[in-house]
Length: 105
Image (cartoon, rainbow, N blue to C red; front, side):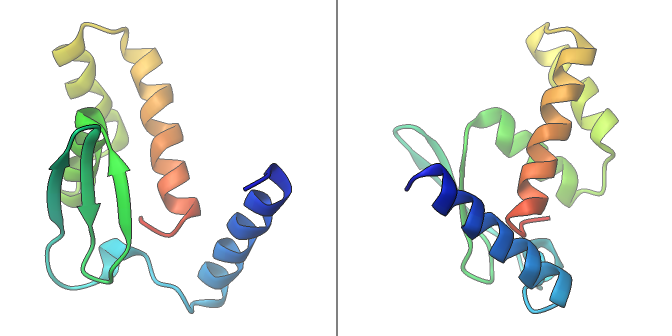
């Protein structure tokens, strides 16, 4: 998929979200399934959407599910990894934003 096609796909998702035709996966009832793979984790949401994440991404998704703030999630990851909080916060915010773009959160 080239960049132009990717942008069209993302724009389509955003349009559907704005129109209310595609609800965020977190809005659905039920719990997601996590399948460990050779390259991380496959998270399957009740509505059928799938996202591939690493262990850190799984921590972020669990934190969102538990109703924690992005700042709290970033603090936890920073304390576990030893990375500077500001850098982790920046990365977590970007990840959550990207999840929102594709309708996961």
